[in-house]
Length: 212
Image (cartoon, rainbow, N blue to C red; front, side, top):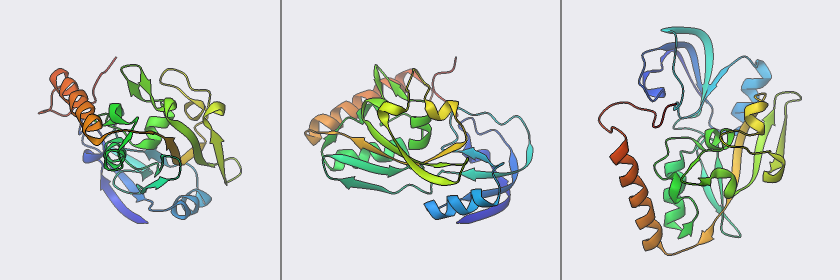
């Protein structure tokens, strides 16, 4: 666990808005997260920091941040990937490429942590995280127990899910089912997706992608 006081949040939001918080916690394991929420539950939780805007220069609150931490990724049987919620979708996509697994190409250039992607059912071009999700491991703040929920029970909708409607649950990890492919084809699709997105969005200025 890494804890910092009077923490600068400028690099933890996609628009690089200047803001600070009283305390920032960077958990590195499930135990760290459980220990934090056993103490209190009124933290401000953020992942990669995309799709949020800070409205105050200073927050007299404690933040829990999944950004550059709690990000382990591993390969499981059956062409599956298990990743912690702080892992960036870019990193998971690159991991899949290394193991010649297809299904994550569309997420190569989507700025999000895995936890955030599941909460909002992230996706693009007709593909969504629900299409490859198997199950999610999460901490229920109601009874402070770790539980698992399968995709069919999450009630995914367009940019919405069980976790968005029930914010008293903290996503810990998710299992993704992919399909074998050829590295060359997977890499080509990843590069094409990135080139198309970069052509539409400024890369020299802070931005959060599409905004409605």
